Image (cartoon, rainbow, N blue to C red):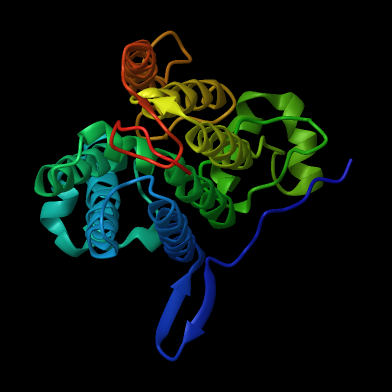
Length: 296
């Protein structure tokens, strides 16, 4: 069996003294892709606002992702002393260290603020944005894969991969499980589950497909938001079983429960609640985003 080695340079290209990292480039592509689809949806009447107002929403969402994602990472996975020691690290998204759950809270806060200013129902805004988020999620997970981080558990599956950045973990694993010593010596590393690609396919491709198709049809308010919470929560909870926990936290309970799973449980619950609420909510035609029937 030959396992591919994931050894991709973190720098995509260089413009003079400026190094453009793959991880930051993935976020940029995610924002650009989200903006293009948001403008397409706005022109089709799925949110009754001007192009300038949509630009404001895009800016607030972008800041919510960056600030919320970085603060969430520090709060849930490290400590807030980091931002005190190095405040500018908050904006270094190309270095990695982003929390989806923190970014989600940042986006919701930004959406709430924008909705108040433009007098749009908050969940009409969330329903509008939700199908666009998987674009950034999928590209972000691809960035994790290119960075060779957030790898999965050891595996002998045909599509398992060698992650050179996991060498320390590989050696420790092989020492604790001698049956893996031969693989370590033969391949220079322990084959692992490419959990980043699983998340890219589930949180990116699958979620985008479902949410986009649902949002194209007449649907009740809250439904798209509810599906987003339910799908992401379930997908993330499942993939955590084959992904190694963050080393600074490890498993938090039962020998398998991770921080990612704990943070995903509320999403599943809220998603189910919103889906139930949608059964009594006004139906939004495909061409409207404000609860009134329209064409398109």
